[in-house]
Image 1 (cartoon, one colour):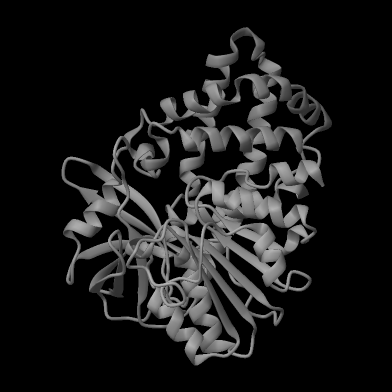
Image 2: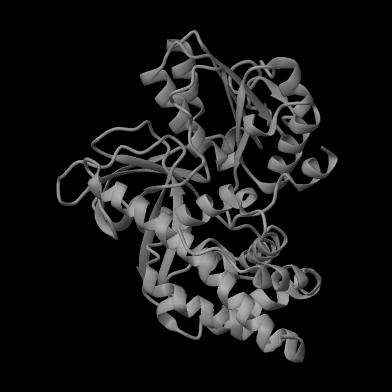
Length: 413
């Protein structure tokens, strides 16, 4: 644990909150501009989060502001620190990378704030950065050690071969992955993801995370990937490459399972898994794990899709429910088509709502796991919290940079 921040540093960091509220996004945009002048550092990051949406600079600006606001109560940020550490491990971030970020951050503060970034402010932010960096480095080292020491575990990038491919819908495809070295794989915790490094001609080194969509086992992983992109928006480079080019025999470089959005397998309380679109991937891992390991546990699986053409793994979910009386399914189609059969392909038209969940699932005792697009998460997470479900029983995963989903509910609480 690093030495505590000095009272003077805490006071100076708190004093910068108004400046961060006004200029935080400009600072983080400038930070990444400076950082990515170094090609090695640029290749460490998932560049899909740095495109036109600017999602990662926005998320980092929120994180920096939260750090400044809670600099005297860092316990409030423990969840965020764990998420960041897990993502760093999936990207293979190492201690030697941290000085580059420090230089970029302090340079960005000076560039954006100008004369307001006094030597005292710069020194305070330097001390605050390294305080947090040491916490992250320590946590990441512990995760790396645990990965390497576990049966089938590894650090860095390991070669996996695509063993088989299956079309799950018009836009979603599953890939079963086995180690090229023929050894076992680390049994993941349901909900975790894998980090991927792909070097594409003309595109360079690209990194992505894909959730594991099967139950834990010692032999293989399955990922279930949506072909990203729609008219007017850039296509997902890696997801399209996987759909178009990756087949049986393709070799991929993969980091060990990571992520903190995981099923509490030790508990026996009811579980409600709620997903939208391709957000079903970690939910299928959880559902398969419960069916295989704790079949007596009550679980509700509630999924929303546009229609049957894009609904993935529906047959797999129905087969699990047919084999296990404690699994209950409910599927919503937002825009069902004529060929979609009510009562067979889906159960109800429209969208999943928090009101429906409160009326049809055991909200007094269940833990809710949510995964899907940001509007989906915001509506359901905030709706459940406002309806009285305790925050510790509402867990969610957003596919993208860490973002604040529960802010409206926290303010209303």
